[in-house]
Length: 126
Image (cartoon, rainbow, N blue to C red; front, side, top):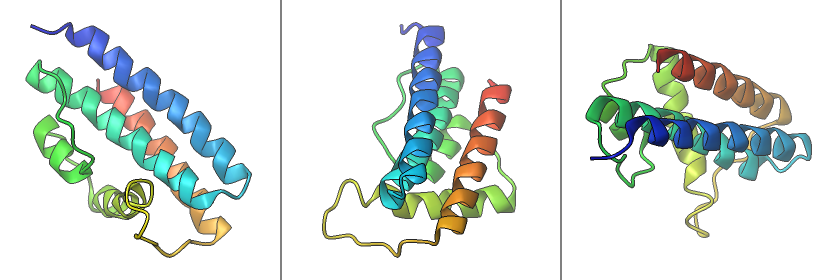
């Protein structure tokens, strides 16, 4: 049996740290790396929900849709589309031959704001 509360704190505090890193990276025009960290924020936020729901360790997956299903989280259309956007940028850090289109600074800032809002929502739901 795992310590569910300890796991939830681990995932949410780690996600908060990653959000700080995402902001710094975006501020320094390191957009792909910043978006990679945005993905991490949401992945970890969802994993906290997986732990809460299953009372087990979250799976070693980076697929936000799969994790959301495991957590029994339901998102609106806007949020579901945003999960798909973020998933494009988690690949960049893992597969060097994957080169996604780098969005404009304005778009990256929009994604960062969306990440903050979605993470806030995820924390409120815990």
